[in-house]
Length: 556
Image 1 (tube, rainbow, N blue to C red):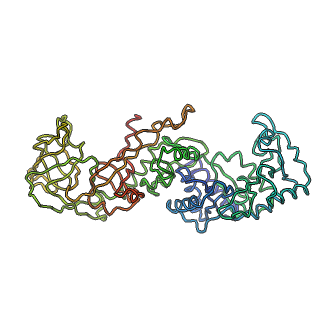
Image 2: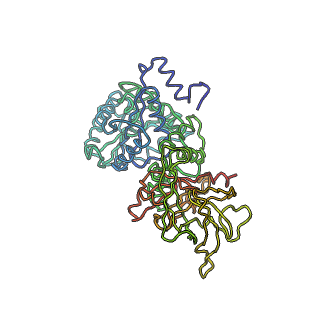
Image 3: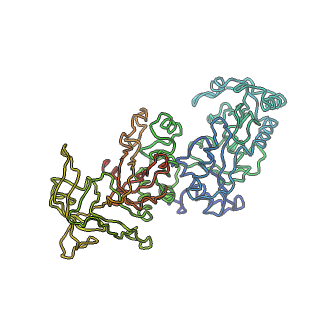
């Protein structure tokens, strides 16, 4: 995305200027610092691509650092998932970093602040701290404990560390300015007592640093040059800089904010996603309808498509909402190039070719990709009985219905031309079978006599097809902005976001399909084997995306 600088987005322009001026000795170091208290979502992908992308573009380094300073909510399963996801997106990070690695050093920095008269132990209760903080229009007022002596503060802080006090009894606060128009500078808490076991440090600590304190100093200790944050941290930048200015740190990174990703027809709030999971509206954090990267991956999205999407949306300072259709378009473009073709019948209707020799099974050839010879061919078997889609037959079709009907002729993909002669129904009047004839001279779909046949149908051989379940996923919410008019976003859930089809008939070759390997089911869309199919006991395929954007027609 070009800007007025002509040198890419504004962050890239800043980095280029820093290198030109030999700032940081021309070095570029970024970081991606997730808190391991949940799974990453598509919004995080933008930050991952930006941080790793900028480091890669300028020959620098990007650290994966876990901000694990809140032990009550952090789990190893999240750490494992985050590492796997970053790798899956195509980025290498070496040995990951952890904020907990710096706990000793952070404690020393806190002691240094106390010694400099820049921090104090406050004994106000949490609700009193909120009351003293003031509002956006009214200044706060000083804590009655703000003027404790350095010696008293050092003693109390050491006793906090020793586990002498219960949670909420004392906090360590930076001494800045309770009248500041920026509430973040009104003596923010930088340490609190939290008696919870940490996934990595166990029970060694019972006091933990707050995010702003941890983040700025972790950046400095790692030699980060450009600390790229989403826009909600813009008001925190003065605190970030204050901490680094007051303390003796190895370097002073530059915090730069960018607009986070907002995408329509979904929610990206971790709290809202958690509600969807915990209330059972979706099947776990990796439900393919969720914007979590675990769910997106399970659905069949490719890392290349996500990286291209992040590149297309660009980086700006202004919040905006991106159309889900753009993400799906990036996915279609990628899958159209890489996905092998296969045939599948989701709502099967039996078709019997009465003049085809009984007991004969013929082997045909089909291209795995119509434009890519290097992807080779696969064998298809053909016999007297096949399945076609129910939607490809109408008993009384309109003039422009170019599929099968009584007396009509169609082309079977890779096979022959067939003509419908008879319609078989059950006692309810439902069509259960079509009796057809075929023209042996039309193998491969050719018409030696030059007759024109407009309809071409996909099919599978009834004798050796693979039976499977198919899940048709759609957008999770029916409204573009699920949180519009401040109503409960749950009310906007799309009841048609999942349709489960049983007894689908798939081409036999799909029995070798692997999870995350996406196929184009001809005429139907892109599908992949569900990674949890083993738990069902039979193959389950997820629809990754439709062949065309059906939502564009609805909104148009």
